[in-house]
Image (cartoon, rainbow, N blue to C red; front, side):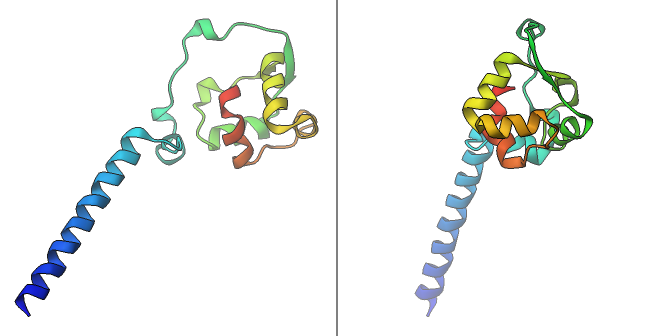
Length: 121
């Protein structure tokens, strides 16, 4: 009886340690880039001003679209007022021309679309 109890506690201890290690890995490595969505905009990398070069404007974001980006975890100071033609081409590659046309018309991107196109911002 004593060995069964000891074996159970040892097994649970090993499982606990493995869960702590896996949690630590996922917190530190953030392979799915979930920190900005969980902790807010404090962990989003800030871009230097030289990466914000002016290019030909693709289209302007509506207030609803800007608010959607902010609620998805983008730092409000990093939300662009205009989408450049380079970003628009990237969005078209990721989301498709039809969906980009809908977004240009004022549709608000979903959370999944934002995650897919996050690299374009």
